[in-house]
Image (cartoon, rainbow, N blue to C red; front, side, top):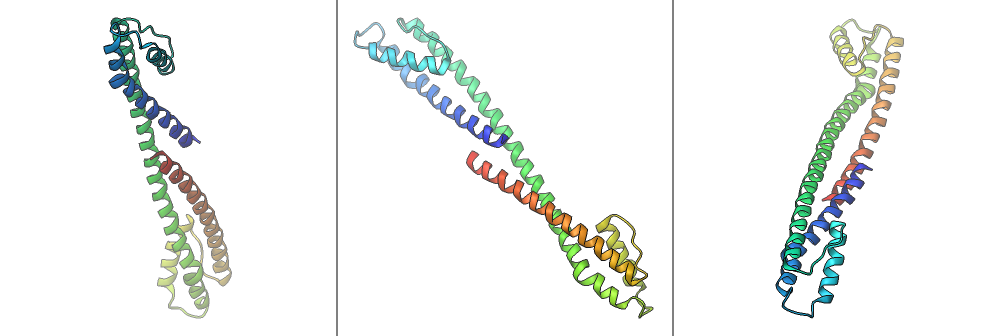
Length: 201
C-alpha cells in the first residue's frame, strides 16, 4: 500500500515539475515579451492565469511586466519545493529497495534451512534410525546428528532409541513445515515489492 501511494505521489510530483518547468522556461517568458506591446494576448493571459492557479493554488495578475516577474518567482519557489519533494520520494523508494534486499537475504536463509532440514528428514535420520540398536560404531554419527539437530531445531535431542529418533523426525517435519510457510510468505512479500518497484521505476 505504501509503495502504491508513493508511486502515485511521485508521478504527480513529476507531472507538476514538468508543468512548472514549461511555465518557467517558455510560457511566462513568451507572455512577458508580449505584455504592453500587443492587444491580442487576452486568450494567452486567460490560459496562463488558469494554469498558474492550478499550479500555485492562487490567482495571479498578469497585467504588467512586474506582475509577470512576481509570477515567475512564485513558480521558481514552487518548482524548488517539488524538486525537494521528488528527492524525498526517491529516498523512500531507495529505502524500499533496501527492504527488498533484506527480504532476499532472509529468503536465502530460509531456503538454506529448508535444504538442511530436508536432508535430515529424508536421509540422515532414516540412515541413523536403521543403525540404532544394531551397531556400536555409530557414536560419531550420533554426535554429528545431535549437533546438527540442535542447530536446526534450537534444542538438544536424545537419539539413543528408535522412539527418540521418531520424535526427532516429527520435530524436523514440524520445523520443515514452518519454514515452508515462511518461505511462501516471503515470496509473496517479495512479489508485491517487486511489482510496485517496477511500476515506480
